[in-house]
Amino acid sequence: MIDADLVDGRFLLRVQVDDGLLVRLLADTCGGFHVRPDLGGAVPYAALPPGEEGEGVRLVLDPEMPEGHEVARLLPVQLPDVDGVLGAWWFVDRTWAFDYLEGRLELVQGYGGEGVADLFLPRWPDGRPLLPYARVITEIDDQELDLIFDTGATTQLSEQAHAVLGGPRIRASSFIAKSVVQRWRNRHPDWPFVERASIVGDSAMIEVPRVYLGGRDLGPTWFEERPDANFLEVMSQWTDRPVVGALGASAYGHLRVVVDYTRGRVGLE
Image (cartoon, rainbow, N blue to C red; front, side, top):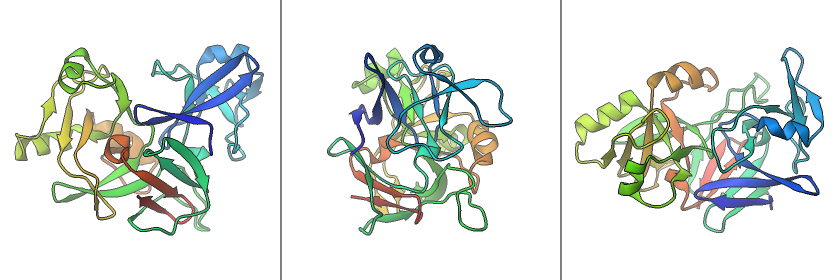
């Protein structure tokens, strides 16, 4: 079992840097690998991969990052409750159980259970991962939507949204392109909607009544709106097909989710 805490729908890894310093890294299947810049004084510097300028740091991880991706960049961290992000390359070629029921993150030996959805990665002709960003196909409002599988998706609620939604101010989320939100709003003006819900760009949030993944109804799910370009122009460069959003634990955080990167499937229990 991985040394991690489940905090408001997100797994935060506990990584011992030295005898007096423990850092928390967000387990993010859609993120990069970076830590806050001031950790450079506590951990020996290391060179970034050839062709990249600057320095990073090496952290002792179990399991280790794959070869070529071992160095964490020194970058500002946008979330106040973590020290960095342990991103997508850490997960590929392995099978993970994100057990939101028991609050455990585990490395497991493949998945043979029921409730399986497909997981798609950009791959080389020999099957090796070209990039680590996984796509899933969801069904929402009788339409198929391609989304990135994003365990690190996090929202920071505005005071206005917190007054409506309650619960923690920082929590697991999912994201969707603004044009999709507009379509949902036109078709379903009764769906719960909160203006200026997030402190990030005053983004709105909308709750859809059903999200289907692999034929399973995940139930009501809140999505935070993002500019179309965030996905159609930026993230779609890194996925095998264009995506319009990111599916985070606001959708599946009430389940045990087994993600088998080698076989390309997601189990829902």
